[in-house]
Length: 411
Image 1 (tube, helix red, strand yellow):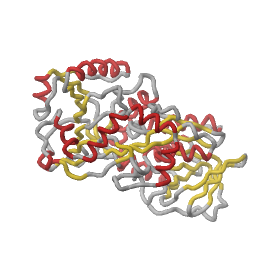
Image 2 (tube, one colour):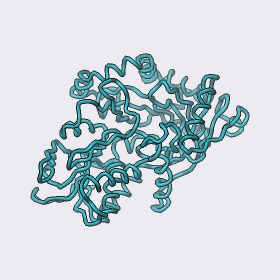
Image 3 (tube, rainbow, N blue to C red):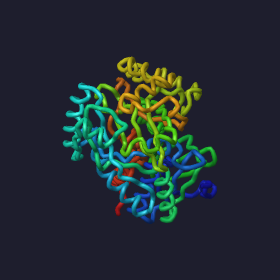
Image 4 (cartoon, rainbow, N blue to C red):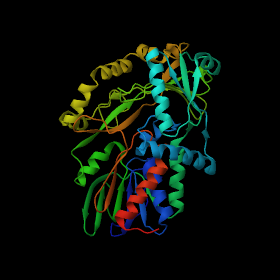
């Protein structure tokens, strides 16, 4: 999608949305649905949409099992699951309600499985218990002492969803412009000046959905300093073709509540193949998809941020283990073989990595919920990691509610 003409910079737009991932595009679509007369433009720095978190994840439509009851994640994930299936059906995009099994491989995990079942019930998510024998019958290649099943979990192609939403934005009169890296935001009583590498634009209001760059945009509005977006690279392998039918459902471990991420899982993908991953390794750059990707600017910022040092101290042993899994494929394989022992080293084939954009506070705590901050004319979506893809449409609706009140927009 080529950069669209805006004129010489004299045009005053009603709204600029920054970010061409699924949250930014869904938000632009929702704003035009509610306010069809808006002069709206989406600016994305890459040459295409969904190039980062949206297009580099496991494609899971999450059910909302893990999240704190009444949190934005819990509420929006439940609503987003239904909205994602409905959108894919309406737009004839691929989606599959394949279900997910969370497998316990030890007595400690069996106990945690019970707590997880209670959390899911509090979130209104139905889980079904499976005994060891039932698990073996359901998934012959999976080993465990028991499992719980989320039948509503599924898979989709979020990059395809984003592109279709962008088509709908354009059809509704909006402009989606790629290759537009935003360098500065300047807010005053008249509006917001948005400086890109190509031009200067002005808008009455701005909504920023910038993922891993969210803290830098927040700082432009005087809202930063107490948090940083920290990049955790999630490395995946694609299983060899002989493993395309190794599982019928998604296979997840029982998460350890003491650890910040969910752990390595087997995921059936749209396209008929299976991936395994991700791990979680501190990346050397905000868009560091490979071990050799290093940014001195990004590393310097992380080194100066006290919250990252505190977070790393709290999770040192886990971080060392994740790094070892990254460097040694044998360790990564062993983590998979805990519940899928038939996998062999030759089955782990290259697959693109992703980067989780995770907000960390100055005291070292991870921001576990979606986080939105505002000025008079700018809304910043400051933290939107998983399950943001599943939750994109409810997040967009929430942002549109905030925009209506903050900007004085009437439907």
